[in-house]
Amino acid sequence: MPPTATTESMIALRREIHRQPEAGFQETQTADLVVRELARLGIPYQAGIATTGVMGTITGTRPGKTLLIRADMDALPITERTGREYASQVPGMMHACGHDGHTAMLIGLAERLLSVRDRLAGTVKLIFQPAEEGPGGAQPMIEAGVLQNPDVDAAFAFHVWNSMPTGKVAATVGPVMACTDQFVLRIKGRGGHGAMPECSVDAIVVMAHVVTALQSIVSRQVSPLDTVVVTLGTVHGGYRHNVIADQVELTGTVRTFSPQMAAAFPHRIERIVQGVTEAFGAKFELEYERTYPAVINDAAMTALMQKAIVRVIGSENLITDERSMGGEDMAYFLEKVPGCYFFVGSENPAIGCAEPHHSPYFDFDEAAMGIGVDILVEASLAFLAP
Image 1 (cartoon, rainbow, N blue to C red):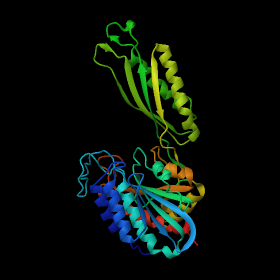
Image 2: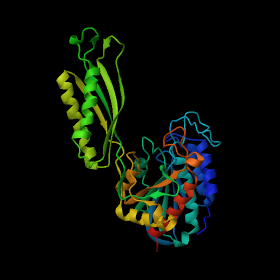
Image 3: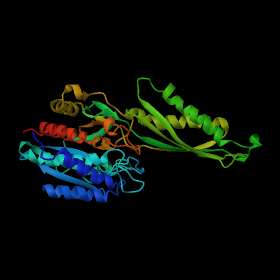
Image 4: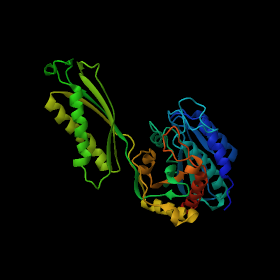
């Protein structure tokens, strides 16, 4: 089936977006571009959802189910160092994760689906979502009603992926991205003179023991067969070389695929911290935030996606066990409806596209966009077949 939206047109659109990156809930130019393209195609749309979100709707020639397909639009507060001619023109902001490509791909998919509209029984909702990188735009869009009128039966989302070479695509059953809980811990001791430690409770010493003890959760309290990461990202405290600190603040993140494991972690951390601080005569404050849940793919929808991948690029290019401890708020959509979140390989060292996501040198092989759209067309036709 020859495409009506070429890879070249998606590349041009992606580069237009790339030059003007915008932070979460500030994607006004990107949303305007999306509206421009949907209007050009004659696709009905609703803008201003959850501040900057946009939804386009394609209705097939016959009634049927409703499929939601989502792309994210936001960029990251990173200074780009790629040197590309289409590099960011906004100081301190960069599309360092590929969301510019996702947005362009969803526009390309819209044009392709219009060309096969007579083969669609049902409705496709095209969701252009803000703020995936944080604080999260999926939940606000759900609360705004994008899953209703008509009710959504299933959902797809995708990510260009520099952890796999271009030409490979991964669709994995079950958990594919982790929850992204985070916490702030404050140890409160009693400050004093560095030469008289017996008169103080050294918050830095207490925190050092806490840091070590927290690592025992994964190494000694969790089965080796479970996947859990506890990362302590920052430690701040102290005044100068001869002053015993009265307070130290630590921040960290917990990643796991298991909802049950995630639910147990606040208590586990609190229990360890309480034991250590009591032993040293210190106190603590713990702020624990449950953020994005794990992204969990439905078995039936993933099987449908895997078949579409095989039809487009062959079984030798399908990967069925790709997972990441990164997080994604597509999880909220997949908590409500069955679906599949899949990865489109985009690594190509020969053209300088091998840096990891969130790097200031990140770029991806734009050939991946055409592959992803071809697969989405095939999967959409399969799901909305008469």
